[in-house]
Length: 467
Image (cartoon, rainbow, N blue to C red):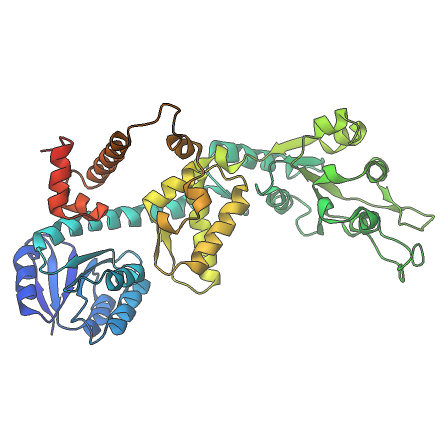
């Protein structure tokens, strides 16, 4: 049976699940003055309570909530699936670190070892509930940002991306040729699709061709088509991609990889608006819009004779430059949120989230593979991760240790270093960061750093962080 203790005024509602009467009494004495506290004697009572009331935190006695650890682990996972923002704390009488780690991976954010000092629990609760409120608000803002900071399937609200959206809007209604430039993985085909979706040819064919993916021996037939018997294996006549794009849009990705002979043929198509299949003596009138893309320096290719200058000017009527992800770090959080929603839904998994420290690392990373690399990372984290919260420790080593700043920080000069001084510098930095995060509350900061109160007091004295 549930027992409620309600303080005066509005207060967050929490549930304490234990059969230990001494723990129930201690929880009531300390927590009930601050929180609307519901005492439950069984883990089976938790989900029904959550279904009928807004509960912001649950404190589980990991030994008595259920008859076995497996049942309690299942309960923790169900609670996390029910409410991704629910604050889940636990306490145990066991010093078995493996068991505690299992519960933390399932969704327990902090695990106390009995005897429990509920003053410490109260401090951790306050910090966790404040972070919960902030997380809910941040998600609401991100949802608004996703709607506000996107254009078709392009995601991002940074100034460089707004310039891209503006350019798309300006060229969409026209028929001019567009050259989309940007590094591999930035989303050049998405720009082409956005132009088409916003223009008068949206209901007409959109033919996408990756010129770099086709061998030179096949690409001419793929682009221009062929008549039956025009070459070995030409057992039937077939229209090429250019002809198939008639009335619509042809997107040529990596156009800089085309050979000079094909460049000449493409130039004729663009100048005369006709296409001639291999083996045919007649040309067919066509009307299509060309959007080309490249990650190459086409100007250098023109100077070196690898790319025709006249074709360059023909395709480069309106250039649109996509920025690399490293130049718009503010978009990482929006993209991350987008991909987490997409891949959790695709795999029928509850929504996962990345903790602030993990996000900070991703925002500092240089992303050589750009948005595609971020998308692949999120997909892997969603599939391989076991918990509801993705933390820095789940990130690949090449991301954790690849930032220039971190590499420089680990360089040892010729004259050597003072190891003790470097360790002290790192200790102090983490202490200050934890105290900032918790508003100066040392018990909560100790919980963040996973050290006990005694060690926290010692370190604060050592570095003069008293008061």
